[in-house]
Length: 212
Image 1 (tube, rainbow, N blue to C red):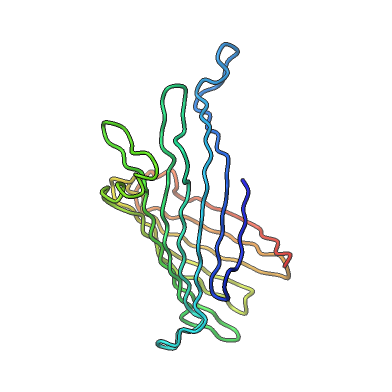
Image 2: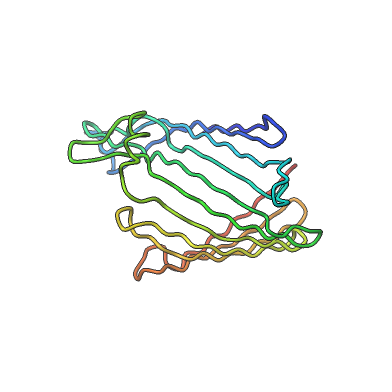
């Protein structure tokens, strides 16, 4: 994929990603090398607003609002069958409740809606599904917090939930992070609510190098 982001105003940024998607459902053979292979392309677009001159309740430079449209593109086609991409609308809000020289405490909330309308007759194409998918019940909800001490050590926790019609995933997340110079190391752990979940006890490690 190819991504680009820029700041278009002191408190407003936008980003765009164009991506190529290939899915292989079954192994290819000499007789039919395209069996089970689907190809498509899609784009994501996002907007982030961090108001700098909002004096209401003394929340200037503490609020962030984001909106993201993901996987907007044509259906994935396998020989004669086609499936829609998981087009999704995400909206989030974050608020820095504590922000001083040594400490920062941020609370965040995220909403995600799958913009795919499917029934026994098939699925609606884009852009129609961006409107008709709102007839589907349910959405993903998540919330959590992040605490930084001197912008060096971070502690995180959160909760994710979705209705049964979307998969009934429910889990808590716990994490930590360390920052040193241009390096940042993060760790997270998933504790599921439901039994025998494939996500149970999942651990993730990541390292970021910030050249800026």
